[in-house]
Image (tube, rainbow, N blue to C red; front, side, top):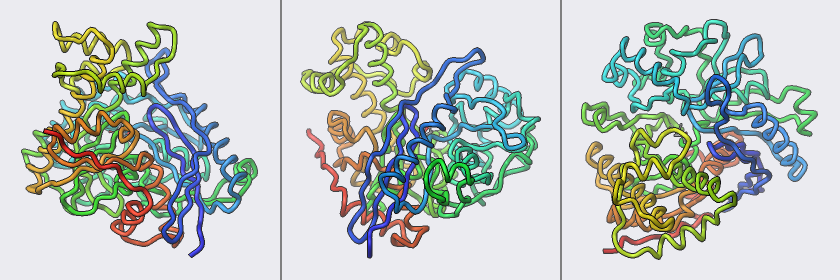
Length: 466
Ligand code: LRH
């Protein structure tokens, strides 16, 4: 089997990348083509994404990918969940909001005055997160004008191809997808004052969305199809998490730590709702039964504040090395405390939670953060096991967090389970695998795709220490 290649656009909350993925018999690798910064930008009406800049970076990255690898056969796009752009007559009506914008507080109040969280959970199986798209739609001022609402990867695919569609894994994070049938819950949308006409046709990962519009094919250098992948980044990451048995838990760790297991059927119990466990849709209609734990956001926001204070960059590997040298117990705080969810002086907010115990030195403070995240991971792994009735014997920690050896070790120690760290680029790999499968260039089952990941990206094993 000859090696085939595709382009993966993978957008995270702190950076985006375009990669070339190559896949063949025993081959699965990535070449980074471009990486560009991303993050919330403050505008007069709140927090947004600089979508215009992001889109230009995507186009430039794709052009460079085709220049380097003219054999590229398709493009796949994934990003963080829940955020959207509204489109009218083919044009974006306004710059997309960033999910941490505080307008969602009002959205939550209004939605819950119509449908309580338990009622919503019975419909959509989704954990309560104040930024789930339905809360955002409820307070969106442009909704009435819009022809259609597109989540970020669908929006980029629309701008590239002219075809509006809603890829199901990401659609499941809106709160408007039925957990039982994976179709739009138009009755719920209606009840919440969200016009069902803005919800686009649903498609599954692997479907071809369309081909590049001629002017973009000219700019990128090739007429290519855009193939739907698990366009929710976490769905793509779970595809490439080399789960070897049903007893494997995963943690997809970047800005967030998504902690859970893969299920064939939902667990819509009161206990699952009370534990705030979600049923996001996975590739091949598996359920991602997981809980959002605040992840590296706590560390990156802390470092950002220290850098602003110092007026110079911080060497993160050196900070983490010093943090791992800190001896004795460090104080812990609740990584999921709502006071930590918005941008801004993170060290002060964490110190407020720690009170008099707050460590004075930066390495000890960083250690507190890492240990607090690992503690929350351990609680979520235990809850996943309890709620599903499954014994869990290992954890696959994938994504950027897998490079943080201190976090991997702390997670092993606090769960008492071995942690298999990597691949770091699980999201982009999952994106590549689903495109390749659609092109007939990869095996058909998720298990075979994961076996290819395991064979080509050996994880690092962290054993729990006493
Ligand atoms: C991770 C992620 C997560 C969502 C959040 C908004 O990047 O997609 O799965 O809950 O961003």
